[in-house]
Length: 442
Image (tube, rainbow, N blue to C red; front, side, top):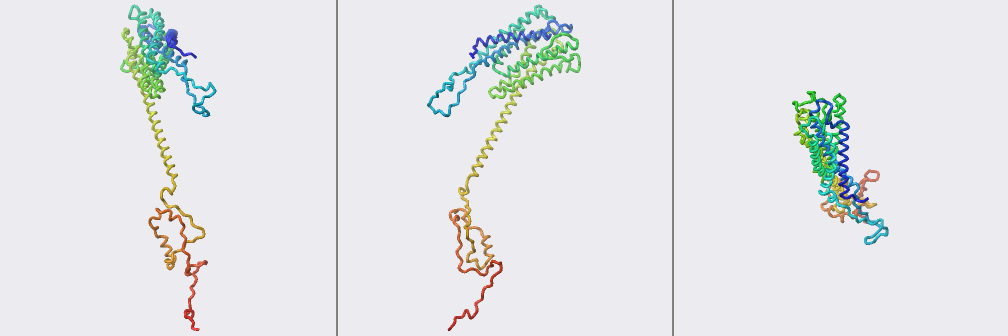
């Protein structure tokens, strides 16, 4: 497959951004999420500001999605790096194989730094911004009949806001092209906002309010109930719907990128990619709020804190990944120490006693019976007991060569007849008579 050039990637970014913007606006107009002319009379005061917030968000998110999709398609179509084949063990160095298919491909792929350099990311962001201009047209034309506008030319104001959203989207797109976690965060945030908007519209139709539109990033269950308000200015269900998802999306989007040490810093900051677009959308529409209601004021106050919650989630993912790496390193170190200790013990047990200088046991010689010395014959059993209890002379352990020879006792010329017999009874000694002792004179 031929490699995609810069021109193909830029054209892809233009097409994807234009398609994403048109699809989102068609979805929003069809379901009544963006309602320039709401059917309920009480919603006409806030419909104008809600529509401008959605216009900025849709233009910015379409630009980011166009640039990210173009980059992913380029990486998928790009050739993989050539893998070096393992050498054939049957061939010797210096020989050449006859099979041409086993030759190593010397084609060097384009380095990632050159493929995804700053110039290329800026080019993709510019292409996505050009494609996002479609949203300017699709927003300005329906905004001509907007009710509650604080200007005589609402279509011009809506077009300016959409253009500002494209510029914001280009800045975030350059970041998302560099950090995969940031791109995932923007995509997940867009999916959550659309789900929340659909639920809000369906709930409004269910309770009989009609197609009143939906506020960006929140859902008013019952704005008139006093239990849902803190101090009359903070709508806590809407705050939870903004803070908790930002935290969870920040953790989940950064979890994979945080496993790599080189991408851990970018993953820790990726939690702000999606919530910052929502916060900027509300911040840029602040001058167009003719009369701020309690619900709109609560959303304005919560939006910046959602950015902090998103960053907190991504930082938490990075910290957990770092702790897991530290624990893994500690386990590997302890395993290596235990292996080294086992090998040292095995080597120590293989040393023979002869190398340590200790005595070598000598087997007894068959047919020999150690006897007591001649000096101990008179003492009998008591002498043998004293010899058994006497300590060995010093130096016997240090001279293994002399102890290695068996000690044969001296043969007895005058046996001790006073000892026990085979039957265990002492044999009486014969007495010599006086006649036998006297010599004969005959």
